[in-house]
Length: 121
Image (cartoon, rainbow, N blue to C red; front, side, top):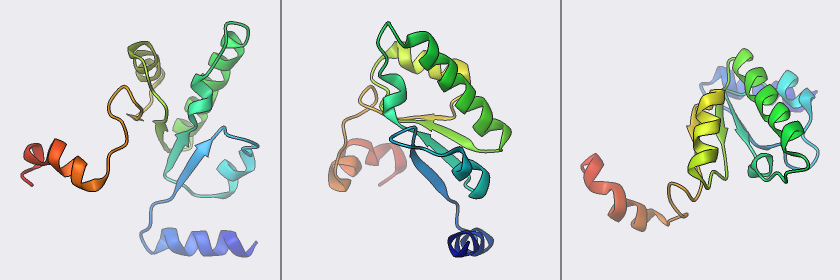
């Protein structure tokens, strides 16, 4: 497949690939097999569970995180909105979390204004 060769060449050149929004729509496990990505970003839909599908959803989240870890990937969970979600994902081994619990999306000038002093900017 031509795309795989291009991706392999990018990785060989030092690029680090991420698979974004995994779990949204029709995510394919073949993507995890075929693409040498360094990071797996779990779509926020994984966290949106009703009481009816909670148990099944938790099994899937745990399995995807374990699978990504075994593939040597960093795991990012998108859409973290509560302390309970944060604690649960940390317990499962997520490397990075993002979502409204930490900050609303901000443009670059707003980010620099909010966090610049911490980084000497």
